[in-house]
Length: 193
Image (cartoon, rainbow, N blue to C red; front, side):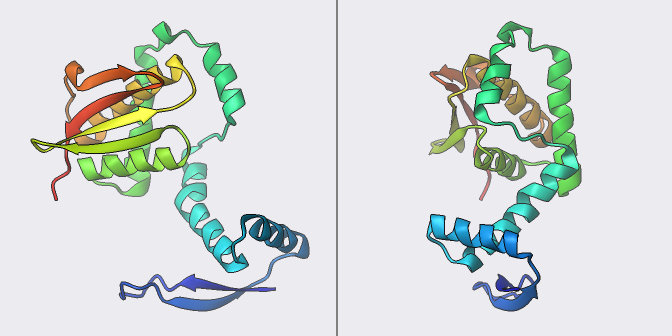
């Protein structure tokens, strides 16, 4: 048995309060948790907190929308078999459908801050690295980079366009997009503060 201290989610205090909960874990799993905690040089409690938060924020959501987790070597192999010029309208429609599922399952608003959260989530899943640069005139430049080649850039670009159109509304002019080595950049309005 392991005693786990987790934040009290009903707390209104800005500082997360901890509550003590006991959970039963089989010895083999507990051994794996201890091993992982030792490897990462974190406490078992900190690792358990991370595991639970990951499951709540990623695992259960991924299962609900049917995400498939594929390692980079396999993804590179699959991307190598795709002709970048043949990413068609049907594929783009399916990308748009994925955003409808996001909005529905997450109960999201259809606005720019919500879209930015979607982008941050996918960055945390390793789809790309993302840098946001606030600029003058209430705009921001977002730079997406990755190491998966031109086909992945094309897919990400179509995915971004579909998401922006569905969640934020409207299309961005083509001059807002720039191709860069291993990715692309786009200029969008800054979320209002």
